[in-house]
Amino acid sequence: MNKETKRIVIIGGGITGLTAAYYLQKEMRNAHLPYEITLLEGTDRLGGKIQTDTTNGFVIERGPDSFLARKESAARLVKEVGMEDQLVPNSTGQAFVLNNDQLYPIPGGAVMGIPTELSPFISTKLFSLKGKSRAAGDLILPRADNGDADQSLGLFFRRRLGNEVVENLIEPLLSGIYAGDIDKLSLMSTFPQFSEVEKKYRSLILGMKKTTPPSRRSTGKKKPAFLTVKSGLQSFVRSIEEQLTDVHIRKSVKVDQIKRNQDSYTLMTTSGEELMADSVIITTPHQQVFHMLRDHEEVAPLEEMPSTTVATVAMAFPEEAIKKAMDGTGFVVSRNADYTITACTWTHRKWEHAAPKGKVLLRCYVGRAGKEEIVDKSDEEIVQTVLNDLNQIMEIEGHPEFYRITRWRQSMPQYEVGHRERINHVISGIKQKMPGVFLAGASYNGVGLPDCIDQGEEAVRLVRNFLK
Image 1 (cartoon, rainbow, N blue to C red):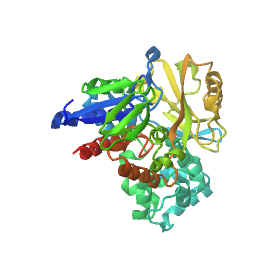
Image 2: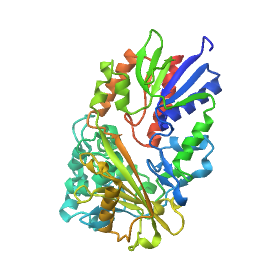
Image 3: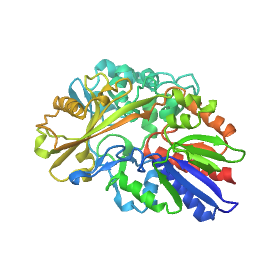
Image 4: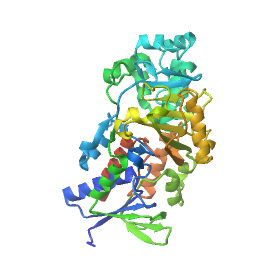
């Protein structure tokens, strides 16, 4: 190895690590940089939570199934690795909220549950007259006088719109993204834009109406909000991996600890091997980061950061097994409803490529903050519980032709109030004590695929600046 060569090790082969590897390799080639890039993955496969099952002509995503179209980094990376022809938008259609054993259409004009149009909000039966009147109070309430202080999503939205709109619409929509408790989730780390809207426009309703393009409002024919890869997101992972011809990819290698030398780092693996690095990007979950850097008190907040356990339950049926027509793309479940499932996507209607003609694919979600015990039950118990819930509103005949249950234990990081400050403390501490070590991934600044891709790209920028 050339004396000038800089050794960069990326720990973790999920989408964040793959992104970092891809763009580092690109930088190395374009600028003729003397980098040696190694990607370490603790399991025998790359992709992290991205897993696709293609049984019997179905395309079943066992982890994330898509990404927001308006966050452009994911689609850009898909195109970079030659898969532009595989990009497909979701089929638009009515989405519902399940409450009081009944499916209520999400009111037209609702943006993340916030009403921006009067008529659909007045006519919906999802809220009582009292609940609607309280939400209308947002139009006259003053803005908060707390500057940029963090608060829970629940506290913020209850103050603006009242309990009923929060419990019946905003909570099931927002908490589903993080599988969390909105009365603990941080406003500034999840949806800071809502705080900005209040600061600028005072009224959340008026502000969202002014700042949201008509195409993003849930009214009439909607513009597709999501994109995915027709052949399955796992094929996207494979395409990235195939591009990494100048990256040393090593699977089934787990890093136990990272030690600082005078001007480099030693990575000690669980098998006793030692690897040297000039710079390190760690993209693993925060629990593993705490373990690897356990000698440094700066990472202590990561030990306390909670994560939720969830599971996805995908079930395949013949079309005739569904006795009540499904006119929409799925539903979320109100926290007040007596159901175990938290949401259900009618996947064959949302994604036309996901099921063969004449077949139905339902994807349900179980597990949420404080209610995770269902995930530990047997497959048969979970399927029966899910079917019992669905049969209260859908009338399904018989059992699925096959099902796929995927358990994600302690996998949904919870951005609780004060998250941003804690993470900033960790990152600034690492920068001081371990310069050249960078953190990126779902535990820090967004859990969606584009958020993780953005963080992978930012890590590349930080590494390049450091190695200059």
